[in-house]
Image (cartoon, rainbow, N blue to C red):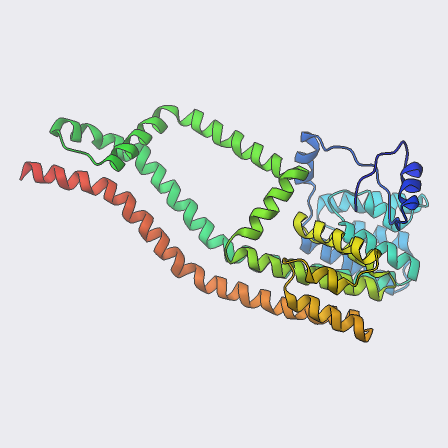
Length: 387
């Protein structure tokens, strides 16, 4: 996947073909405006809702229900408003003569590139119901995995946010009430306590400005992370987080192996399968790595050789892919890669859940000790002065 400047879609296609590239699709790309980025946040559909839609869609087609009738039935059954509207637009496009893949591609932010390209390959092979069943299983696995990761991270984030909320209340409302007592008693206050008291006075007088700055900063940060440059920075940061970064690396490797296996089995060439798999990553770093690997395969190198040179892919991945290439069983070996790293992910998430609570208790204990020492030490000095 890449960008090319041209006067029209046909001109862009000709440019790509002249470079010996296989053109999957050509879509006009415009720089997203701020409003479009905000609107895309509200047009998201839960993976679980998309999974149910895909499973029902596959069942209807498998039962020999015509495509337009299947979409009409799904429109009436779907509860999610955004997905319901998208299905209505897809049905309209299909009835107008557009291929299903093209109709799905028009629903930006709802159906991923991987979903669209899987449907496009199924339209060629005539295995649409089978591919939709696979996509339903794929989305279900992604939903379960995402749920595990969110559940593992929810508790520590909640406790830390709650602690900071309590700290702000104490610094803003409690400490300023006792500050005059220390001043009247001429008590020597530690520097850290003076800093906390000054912060409390500042927040008491300028809370509205601090809140406004924080909201603007968070809004600007989220908007930046929606840009192309911001996505790369965000994804690089995620991969560098201790423990969590390694877990996400395994997620991306398993995702690549599973999607590439299905695409190769569906008749696509290895470079095409890698290019489409890159769009399923959800991480700009791994997306770029796979684009680079696809280019190297087109130039005559083996996929195992390309992956072996990338430190982001463990040696085991390259070795298993090499075995698959030498035996002509690449899909089967990619399936083994997917199963191995899926188990690794499950073990990592389980261990993470078990480690989070004791680590969190220690962290919160240290933070509470620091906060209360800043309050109790001056109070102890005050009581000593009256003794």
